[in-house]
Image (cartoon, rainbow, N blue to C red; front, side, top):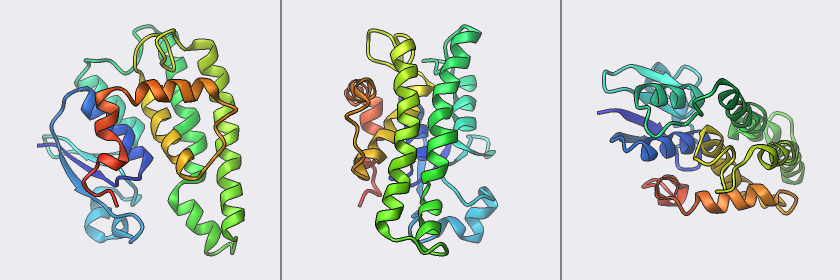
Length: 214
């Protein structure tokens, strides 16, 4: 059986959990407690040299890392329901939305970055929170404009079906609320996220519904 190395609060792991639920795939969860540093253990580094979550082990025992790569692998090996539109232009637009979150926002606000700000750089909690909020606002402002232009009437980031962009949005919204970011300037994102939370796959993948939730 496939394995997902995951942590309930990891937004990158959350993306993959949504995809696995959407596609109805069975897997074993292997919990990696990030705050205590389990991701730096030698056995885990043998699976993921970066020491990050998620990692995904296929049915054949092949280890994959990086959430977007895992998501595209799952989409190519289990194409229903698709996470990308059929047309090249649509696929490029969805990938761009996903990358606003996964490549621009999330890396700057990752746990290891926040810990580095407080530790070696000596920043207090107010400064760390300000850092977090700044990059959330910058990313969400751009994403709000994109989904307003390309989102469909049914409440998704692009067109009229769940896509890779939605899988990236929902975890980032969860984290933004956790850090008490002001979401009022992004009514379209709030609307889309509200719609996504009514879907069974998104609910099943939510942090508060994971066995390691604390």
